[in-house]
Each structure stands twice: as C-alpha cells, then as structure tokens.
Image (cartoon, rainbow, N blue to C red; front, top):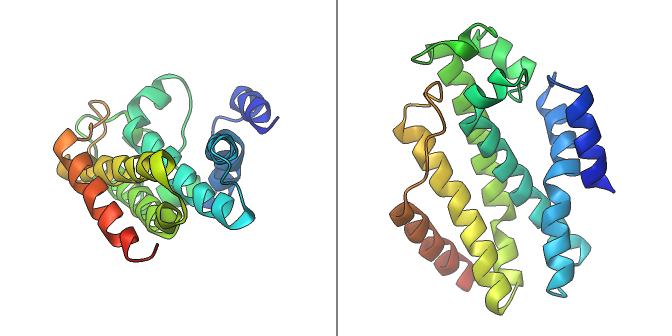
Length: 184
C-alpha cells in the first residue's frame, strides 16, 4: 500500500522542503522494498526493519543525487529546498553544466547524509544469514560505491549520473562483510 501511495505522491509532489519530508517519501517509496525482502527471507523483526529502512532510504537519496539532471528535466527536484538554500543553490543551478559550486555542495550534503544512513543500517548484515546476508552486504556496498562515484565526479551530476565501479562495489562488499563478521 505504501508503494502505491508513493506513486500517488510522485504525481502530486515535485519538490521537498526538508530532509525530513524527503525521508517521509522514502518511507513510502524505498523502505517497503527492504521490508518485503526481509519478510521473504523470514528475517523481519522490528529491529531489522529499522536497519533496513536506513539502508533503503540511503540508497534512494543516492539515486536522487545521481539523477538530479534527469529529475529536473521531468520537473522534479528531490534535493530538499532547505539543503539547496543552505548551499546557496537555486533551481537555475540544477540545469547548469558543469555543476555550480552551490549544486555540488547540496549534492555533497545529501550524499553525506546517505553515507551516515548506510553506516547506521550496516549492522543488519550481521543479523542475517546465508544469501540474505550476502545480498544486503551487496546493497550496502553498492550504496558506498555510488557515493564514491559522486565524490570521484566532484559531485558534478549535471552531465548525468556518475556510476559506481564494480571494483569499488567488490571492495566495499568485502569490507562490510569483514566488519559485520565480528558483530555476528
């Protein structure tokens, strides 16, 4: 039901005032997917769902960072207005090529928020077993690698989405599994 509401919201809302408003949207659009996966593998508990929510929100935020130009072309802005204002970024900056320093600062702030959420959710890996553990480690690693791609691009998302490198994903997956092995 939340995914349907997210679709409806996409039809009504094209801007988000705050990081909190965007997180509420992620609770509808991204977080249910992680919860569904946990239910499918028989591992859903309130604690695990909360950790999954952090990961899923982070992944959604990173996707929004990567897709600034594409979203703007569709009349949408997923970078919160308060973050844009804090960075001194206007909507005109969203269409600038190369990205203005203000846009880069706003994207960097959002990417940093996503990285904190990934770190908050990472302990989920230690609470899972088998294929579920590997899959979630892969999702977390993909998020870290997406952030690496944004950093590598200098947070310039004007020409399109900076993409994660496979070697970065593999490196992060091994690191996540190694860190969480000690917690299991």
